Image (cartoon, rainbow, N blue to C red; front, side):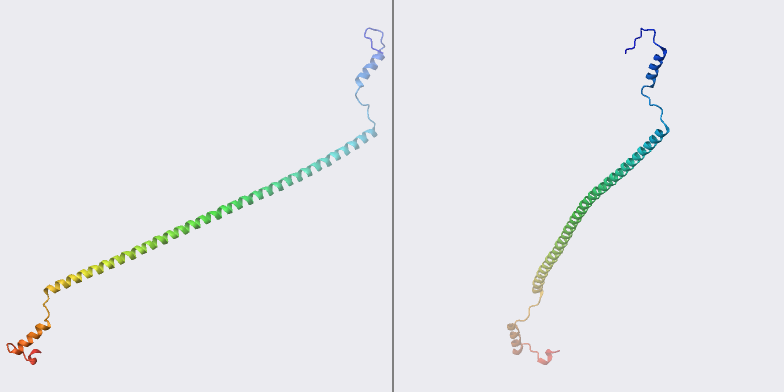
Length: 180
């Protein structure tokens, strides 16, 4: 049946019933105590399920965080070990370079010392040769000078002639007088 707004003879109870249907449409009828108790128990069960679900999620989240932290720590440890290995290798290479440089410096120093020693030996040998040469020249000069100013030694011919002259009587020294 359709509602006709033009018809004026609609009883008031009909209008009140329509208004009550409109107002009460979508609202639940009042609950009994038993229904309230069942709903309260259902709500508590639902809250317990939510609490357990939240606890489960919290535990799963903590486990995920712990696993993630463990994985990050393992990655950090792996990276740290790699960095430490690189650092040790670089340190070893630096020590090797330093050792080679020190050996080269030592060799250069030894070479310089050997050259210096060889130079001093060569200088000493040259000085000795020059000294010998000077001595030989001085010796030759002394011999030449001494030869010019020295009295000639009597030659056996001269000595023989002198004795013969003495024996001849020109001048004769007795052997006893010769020692005096």
